[in-house]
Image (cartoon, rainbow over all chains, first blue to last red):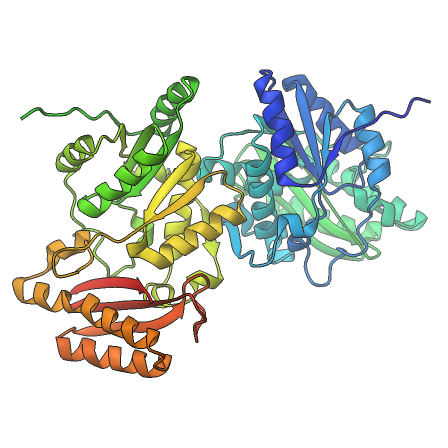
Length: 281
Length: 281
């Protein structure tokens, strides 16, 4: 089998040089920021970017500042060679894989914070998480200066945070949200699925079923608080070990009670693995 | 006398269109962010920018988020026609004067914060001030996308905050610090000097004399804490009504006690007017 060679750069200067060369040819550029451990979901973001621009850069950076002190930063799966191979097969043009020191040199002391859409759900369950995300995404966008950047709807609250900061800080880029890729039983694809035991994997697959059921009932006019309470109960019965939330919220502002368009959000632990998912009503 | 006409734009879209047209001609662009009430100090920033790039944009925006609740936002002097005339005579190419709603539309909820250099002196005396500055300057830089941006050393701590955020967020611009413009008795030029009564104006003029004296003594090897204590006493004797600080600090990191290169910083009120100044040792 042909081994496709994907160029890899590790510094802002090299990244900018590549992007500048493409711009000089008149090419438009897309960025797909990731934390690696790439799966079909990530590759679908690359494919989507490729339909919009000529050149696609994927970044792989496991960002320490968006992990809490008791979270899985050290354990987070890393396999750059495999990621590079996947990206090459998805016709990605460049892998940007900076080191932690390239991103956060000694003396680094700036943070970007988004209030409002950050202040709920994962913003409560994971203190500091969205500020870590907002800061690193601001940096990646300003380092690469792409025309478009693609983020998965799997991390829907993150997508809203990023849309907000891009608008508020006037970063000249179009943010594109891409639909969540799912496995056969509907489980949202996630790098963290790799942590799941066989038994946990079966539990995990119930989350999207419970959400789909809740969406049906909301469409039928059932009250939001009833649907939420029954969703929580159903997650417990399904075997989730700790449930952070199961909530119906406004799709644009995360307001609660939600006005249409509504969206359902869930976060729960299967064993030690925290899974999140969300779904349009 | 010839009335020079300076183009004025009020929206990000218009600003970007002008800048794009210049870029298409190969011109480099400089930005001089101001809060208006322009004096010779501001114009020296425009002149400095003009030595570095072909096209200079001055922004005039009295930024509400960098004023505290009991500060002088409402009273801050505003005279756009006069400012436009001054800028035209300084060969500025464009005045960017956005409205508050253009800068902070409904729903705005992002802030940029710099720790470290923000955490002392004016960061203590004016809570929230530097976050307001960091956020608005990030926006202006990303709206205009200049090659260089010029800020006065008069607001030296602000200059360090801006250098830090530009480096940390990877905003592709060169930040240039410009020497403080002074009046005949050495008083630093400031828009707030307009608030001073005749008696206060005489008091105000003592600040730079006291700082110059302190610099001489530091160069002669006198201890930093002694020089600081005597500077505070001298400001009191000179008639300042409230003194926020008189401190010797590291010129690059604001550390205290300071290692060389050192700089002296002062903030004090003449009547109700808060004046700041700083000086290299």
